[in-house]
Image 1 (cartoon, helix red, strand yellow):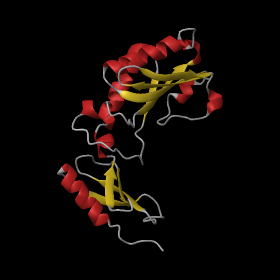
Image 2 (cartoon, helix red, strand yellow; image 1 turned 30 degrees about the horizontal axis):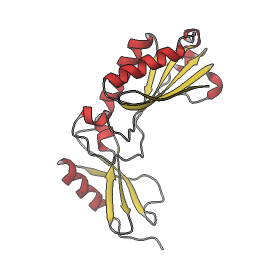
Image 3 (cartoon, one colour; image 1 turned 180 degrees about the horizontal axis):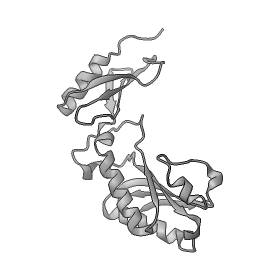
Image 4 (cartoon, helix red, strand yellow; image 1 turned 90 degrees about the vertical axis):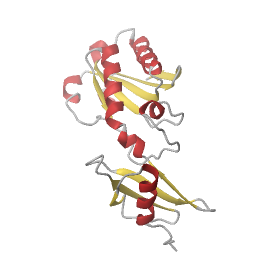
Length: 202
């Protein structure tokens, strides 16, 4: 039997107390809320118009716990601006795709942009699209150069680098076109804020 202990009002009260702002419930994330163990909803704030903030109330077995992704929404534009700036510094002509993960909560409570981008359990991932002719022998070196730039900013993140003959077409898309057959090379790199954590190509 589905428990009814979860409350949208409790989620709103939690957000108001935590962030000192007004929030309004935008509705459940899907038609299956609440489930047996949690309630997952979106809320909105006049400080971040047009953006859904993910809030979850969950039963830990001992108590009810609340979590959210407000910092990811709050700093979304700043992250996009920074990773775009650094990618263009390294690669020149490129298209950067960055979209925050919609249903991932943040365990920590960063007090600033610097704290947010250096969180150990980072939610930051972005993709860099490049024309296939740019994929020379230095593609690994270029990716590591971008990772070094990110580390100089203290950013913990992962990113993917894609080379495609369809660059002109794909770069006009608002969202990353995730069809692997369109790419001649793909690299996945992650940083821990001070160095490269992993790097692989396929």
